[in-house]
Amino acid sequence: MIKTLITLVLIFLLPLVLTAGDEDGILRKGRNFANRGEYDSALECFNEAAQINPENTAVWLAMAVVYVNMKMNYEAIDCLNRVIAIDSRNATAYYILAMVYEETGDVFGSIDAWNRLLDISPRGGRSGIARQHLKRLEGN
Image (cartoon, rainbow, N blue to C red; front, side, top):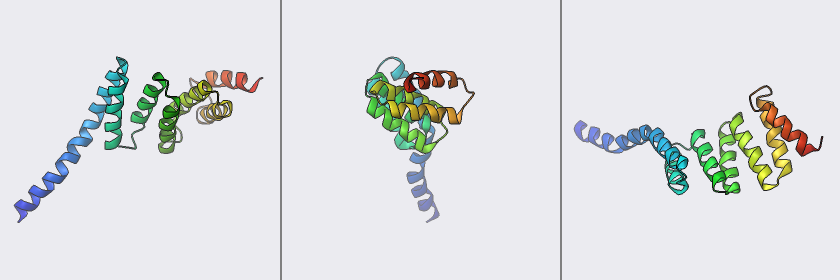
């Protein structure tokens, strides 16, 4: 009875343990595809990693960057909003989001994203860039 129970536990839990350990490898593999411009393969990897851990902001950021490179800005925005839903203080997500909004012509969205970036990191490395963009967008 105990042997059967242990066997059943191993059958059901072992794939979960192995999958959790594979998440970083899948993300790394996706990044390698993305770096070579193989965006469809990269997205397959990132989608797989997101299924394993939908709370991993690195996966959603990587997916957003691939979508930006593919000129699929609205898909990128969706990914970036997922990052922000998980971690509302993710400055990188706001930076990319502001740039994508500018690319799509959404001035108000861009201004909001730049301001949120400055709220999070007023003296960070991207704060000067944010202020320059805001000055241009606001016509000052």
